[in-house]
Length: 301
Image 1 (cartoon, rainbow, N blue to C red):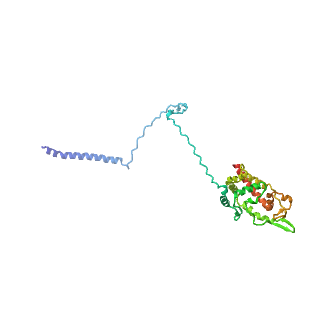
Image 2 (image 1 turned 120 degrees about the vertical axis):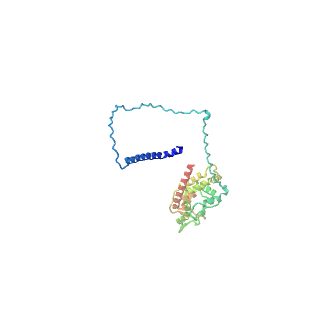
Image 3 (image 1 turned 60 degrees about the vertical axis):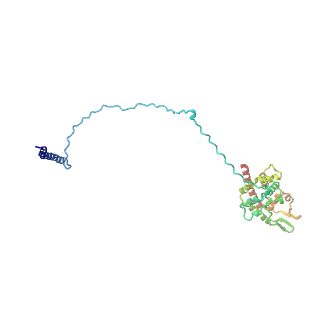
């Protein structure tokens, strides 16, 4: 037989062999599937033989070896001298320059500024016109110096004179001081009382250099004006409040007190009688507050 004929003759036999082998494998798979499917009861496991437990010998509890504490030592690295740097010193901040005080005008040219500063204060409306606005600081200094000695000069008044005339009561030939005339001095007291004393003192303190200059012109170059102002206030407060009927006489064009001991009083004492006892008490209250404020500022300086 040729090689081709031999191959064709063996082919059917090989096909039968492979078909038989596939049938055997198929039977085994079907049997395995039937044996291990889920709805079939699982075979009971065979019991395991009991295990005999052997007790262990008693063991002592474990205790760790004690550890002795070691002292802590701080390791400070030693740096070479060239590595040590010092911080630059902190420079102190320069103190701010004090605010410059406003320059004051010359004493001879101070009326305009003093008048404006004075009129800006909250005086009783309509009463600020009672101030004399000529040579204001010098008038105040001279009047204060005179009052401290009990004198009054009509050439150096700080206020204008009252518009109402001096009031006299006539009964037959007797002349007496009319108490109705006390009312002409009430506007001046209302004017002084309408501005806080602290505000008045602040204005005096602002112009203190010019007041000291004017006071030096009177012959007191080494004394502050504030000292003389306090002396004048003390003189006024020391005068008793006198009430009663005061007889007058008219030897010439000016009225005089008929009682010699009253006429012999100082100009200031007689003027306090002319303003009336109630007005004098109001004046004393204002002067006492003024003195307290001046003394407080003097002690704080």
